[in-house]
Length: 453
Image (cartoon, rainbow, N blue to C red; front, side, top):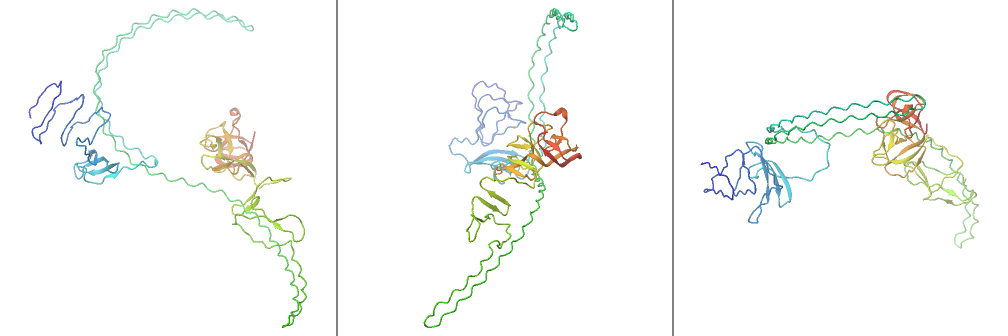
């Protein structure tokens, strides 16, 4: 093949005479400014890298207006078998598809739909980084201009005389500032040299396989169930009243006179009933009477006062009025919405995605309190996705020792744990309460009193 060298200033058309001829441009760099149109079955570009500055690459542009169903890209990955991996658009299904082993026509192997992105899994191990492409030769740097001589620093003015002790002396007059030296002449800029060509970009590293999903953390130990209260003794069954005497039967035939009615039996005791232990019915209603006396009607209410046996909840719609009450447990608590479920004894602050979250820093002024283990009285009990926060009283608390009985406590740098507050670090909002017991170094669960210190 004969080689020609010609500068192309206008429009030129290179036409092959035979269908199997190949037109080649044998040069180190072929730069085309404008549009390049190649009409043929296959176009080859034998280069380490191809830089295209256009915003779009158009495929499947058929002048006939009839477009093939698939079009895409093939990447050669081996020298045998089905040596190409491909990405194509399937027009009939309107989806992108991929194939990891096909031929030069894209006919072999299986094309699999590229599905919608699933839920993001745990980040996999980072794939090995691809080799960095060779660095382009850097153009020579122009010589730096000579730096101008720095001006002489002016002499410092004399310090004023210090006034006598007692009445403060008049401040000395500030010395005159020295004249600033003349700035040196700026050196000439070095001659700019054309920047070397950018090296070809290295082949991108193979994407690492998605990491295995981490195992789910162990479920925290469930708190011990409180002892069930003693069941009250069953009441004695009332005595059955004696049956009255049957009246004398009349003579058969003409019906005789009706026999005298027998005396009514004694009424059974109204103070005793038969009772059955029931721990599963979610709707037991206390029976009440309006007054004392015989043959008094028993009444119930199904909406104002009832007992759910399975959870053990007694519900009263209205106010509880009494002289005094007592509780088995020791703290006053209120439900607050948390970002996750925390173990009882966890120290929390106001913040996070909802209302309260676990503490993470020492002496946090946003300190809220500690998650209750078993509140004696719970306010805001209908709040959803909430946990009881101790407002006052004694409760178990996670701490980082050493702790001595009576120490004032605050939040620590360990998540959800309290620690001793140093006096120098006190400020409003940082105190949690006082320790009721001592412990050594490390993480412990101790009793504390929550409240102002």
